Amino acid sequence: MAPTTSTTSGDRPVRHGREQFFIEGEGVVGPPGGTDGVVAPRAHLDAAAAPRAAAFAAPTFRFSRVGPRGVRLPEATLRKVAVAMTRGRQRDGNVPAGFTYLGQFVDHDLTFDKTSVAFGDQVSPAELLQGRSPTLDLDSLYGAGPLDPQSAVFYEADRTRLKVGRTTRIGSDRARVGFDVPRVGTGSAAERRRALVPDLRNDENLAVAQHHAAMIRFHNRVVGSLGAGVPASERFERARRRVVLHYQWVIRSDYLPRICDGSVVTDVFANGRKVVEPGADPFTMPTMPVEFSVGAFRLGHSMIRDAYSWNARFPSGSGTLDLLFFFSGTSGSLGGDPTLPSNWIADWRRLYRFAQVGHGELTPPRGEFNLARRIDTRLVDPLAVLPAGSFGGAAGDEGTIRANLAFRNLVRARMLRLASGQQMAAHLRTQGVPVTTLTRAQLRDGAGGADLSDLTPTQLDAFLADTPLWFYCLREAELNDGKLTGVGARIVVETIHRAIEGSTHSIVRSPGFSPSLGEVAGRFRMADLLLFAFEQKQGLLAPLGD
Image (cartoon, rainbow, N blue to C red; front, side):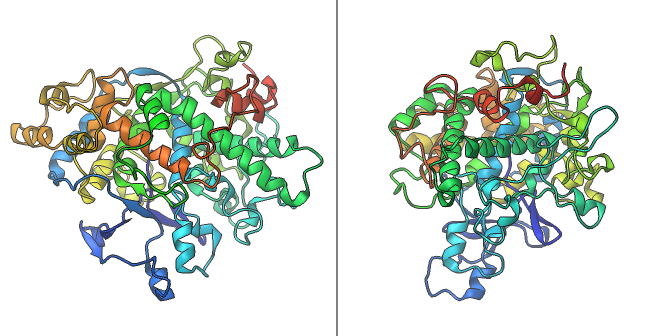
């Protein structure tokens, strides 16, 4: 998925598409007034005596560059490529569609800026460093914890359980507790709809918001599973540790092997990293490689469907992508209701395969299961015309090339002078990773992906010589039956491994950990997480029935 830029909603930031990046060793890279380039010298944030004013002026998230700098292709070329990527028919892949939005949830967890909710206006330089946390600790769910004044609003009075939301009755579909994210509930209509969660990006479309609501349920169920002997003062931290470790297990054992070459996943988790902070002290704070956030991990954009068989009220592909944006608080208006209308509650059976964990009874009606689109160089047509709220743009951006997600991705990488796919392949080989560079013919022709025939011979020649990293990684996957491999797989797996390693609670640093919340010892997939969160009840996993 994608890191993001700041707009505001009330007094809290909403990040939709980050335009400036603080890259270690380079400073702030981004467009001053719409132009590209480095706009500030390096800020020495780690100096204990740095003035507080300098800390306030510093960027709020730390990135790194693990490869070389690339060349900047002309925007006219990128415009043609973006149009090609969002034109034509997309193919289904083999991955359940729910993993598309689990990936978006993971992205928001990785790129969550704790300082925006954790410390208010009184931020010290040391807190700035610790607040920029590209780790997998579920900060986007927990904020800074129930004892932090800014984050306390996300919790119940017991300072242990997270608040849940309540849907709005519509017709015969009654209001239900726990099937929406909590919302503010006061002020203007827009204010009432605003999610009361640490990261408002998790309410930018309905699918990721439903995942956030499910994670709230999961945490609260784990709290309820703690023995009566656990002191009240320890219950939150005990629960959080258990939740985080099981969540990381899902990412390692269920998510990554579905989107990446399994041999790369096994190699990195067994033998360690070779490219992303190899040999780093496990207890130091990771940084976020721009090659991951602006390149390889945007793979999820190609997995998005243009329509979903969402639930019994919106079956047979009638849950269109624009409606998933509309029934959210950030990109839409929830249909004018203060909370999610009850007829839009997700049917999880349509998004994940519960039969794979022994629950064949939790199968949707025939033809109603959603597969993600194949990971390749095509994006569905609606992603060429994003609503302005989904990327923090102005109303005038809608309907222009600036609302084309592929164009936004390509231009952002150009702005950062991100390494090309060929450069990254060469760099990986110098680090001992045996990857093969795609040929010009493979990059040009692919396997049923974007058609580059609209490029002029000169444009095509330059594009095939220095192929933007995001496109290159998607072409690799396209040629590998829809799974990241080579450059893309190595960047994604190593970055996530480092993020898990650097987390407060870590399955990488705790090799003896084994999941205990699933029905089978040592197994915990996303379907297991949902089964636990929703009490193994079909009436909760699919409350609207068939």
